[in-house]
Length: 342
Image (cartoon, rainbow, N blue to C red; front, side):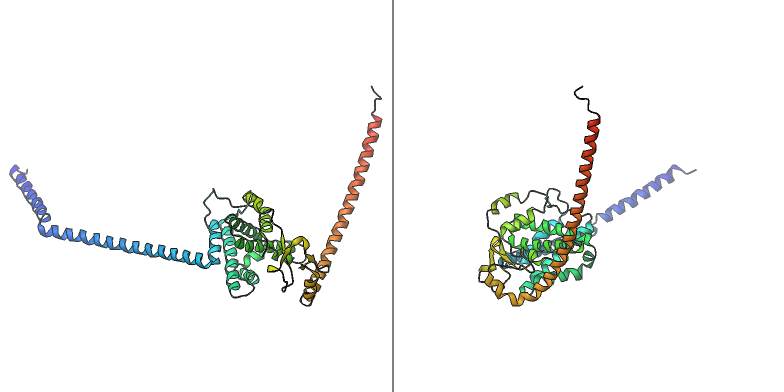
């Protein structure tokens, strides 16, 4: 049995050890080490915070400088970036998308990258005085071949162009919207050729939007979007005269533009438009070759339409005969059941 004296001694030894540890912890040397460690941690944290703030400040300054350069130089790349901003921010349900409803995130990204590629290459080529439209189309064929292999991908891309073009018109950016209208019209022609509705692309319809007046431009977008976002803008420009472009590159008119109702089209190919007979004669040497190609394709289109008209006429004749026979049958039944006034 443990005696009370031994128990008291053990308790005293434990209390002495605990007091010694407390004394060592509260010693000036230990306190100085603790303080120096805390100070070192705070200094590191402060230095890290200063570095992060400096990096953020530099990024903001670079962004502000880039925006200033874009506004001063009229950088078209910034225009494409602003036009595509709505496509990247897909979580804002309050924004009107003007009919653009991609079925998946993958399709959303494809449309955005397709349009961005076309716009970037187009502007770079135009700065070098090259054919920006053709080079832009080739760039999309090389970078996004999956879109051209499946025509089901083209329709959402058209909706994407209509969305961006409508947004730019609402902001007063008509120049940018003309480019997206031209691309959308070209893709519509591609689908029509692919579905055998026509045999070739009607380039006149495509490129008339490239330099279209505001009336024609707003009307093109307004007829293709399901919303009413362009109604007010259309009321502002509907009084403007619709203009067309003369096919003669040496046309004396300003920007080769004339009232569309006064333009004369080539009766052989029905593709080239001219403001006068003089312009048509002056351009005949360069237009002759393309006129032959276009006219041969137009003949094929005319044959297809003639066959369709014949089939439609035959169906109408059959329906008329069936209606006549049915009317006669009902007339005979009515005579048999006549009660003569009873």
